[in-house]
Image 1: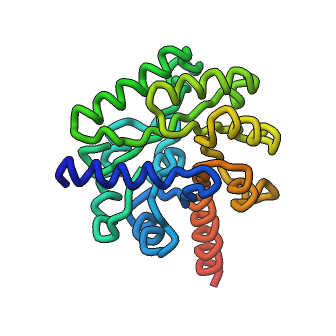
Image 2: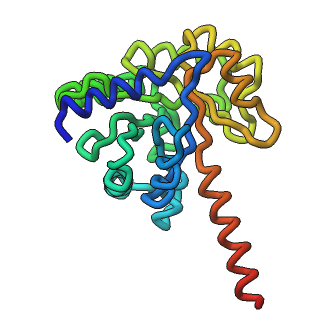
Image 3: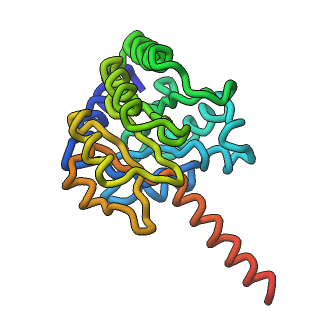
Length: 239
């Protein structure tokens, strides 16, 4: 894929991140799941979930290597080429990434300046490869690590200033409350990504009404698919 074509795809992907009209992503994890989702008319773009990619490779999320991640991205990009939909590594045909502020090696958050610098380096690299509209969804793990909303806001503003398109505030088990989403949408001018909680959390419509720009579901599809596979296999083996 030529760089001009990649950047056109990146620009289209970035344009989908619109407050009050959020991009909804059904996160995939391999070529098969990618083709299944890409074939759906309402799937405007594709994004992987690192936990699910790691599980599919027989690894744990915190041991997922760059090599395995890139290989997975290449396989997925090749599998969905015919659909012409953006995928969230430039050389692999991908036009966006999630970039976390949690350092798996030290088990701590990067400092705000270091995390922002990582975003700047990613954007500089993308620009040097002819994709200046590359999309960085900057994940903020402050709440998961026991920090408060003030630090989330400080980090998020720094990440957006560094070139991120959106800030993904992850709440893990605690989630992100309605009041927190409202406040973050306000301070980030809507450039917020939240994870959809299918078990009694805010709905897509409610999140859109509040004004978020991006909604994802993480490894939900992979977990559900494996549970269904195990259930069906158990029934077959019991015959």
